[in-house]
Image (cartoon, rainbow, N blue to C red):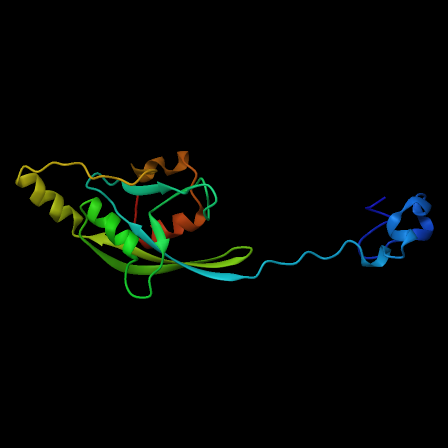
Length: 178
C-alpha cells in the first residue's frame, strides 16, 4: 500500500482499503506524515595526514578506531589540523618513529554526506638519512608505534580496508607501488 496508495507525496485515502483503521486518516494528519527528517548540519573538517615511508618502502598506517571518521579502515596517521604547521599529535608520532622533518606537499578534499573534509598532506623528509646515520653508528632500535599502527607495503593495500580518500592522500604524497 505504501508504494501505490499511501505515498508520502500524496496519499490516496479514497482508494485505501484500511483507511477507517488508519490513525493518520482518522486524525486528518495523512498529508503531514511522515514528517521530514531534520538534516544534520554540514561541518568542515581539516585533518593533517602524515605519510611516513620506511627504507623498505612500507607506509606507516593506522587503523581508525570505532566511531572515528572512516572507522575500521586503514590510513596514514591523521589528527585534527593545526592552524599553523603539522598537528602537535603528529609531531610527537614523527619523533617516536625516528622521522626527519615533515613537509607539506598538498591537499585532498572530499565531500561526505554531512562533512566537507580537507586533508593537508605531509610527507617525512630526511628519514632515510637519519636511518643511515643510526645504522652507521650501530644504533638499531625499532621505532615505537602507536596502538593500531603498522608498517604496510603498498602492494598489500588491496588486502586491507582503505578508503578512496586515503588512496588520494597517498597519491599526493607520491607513494608508489599501489
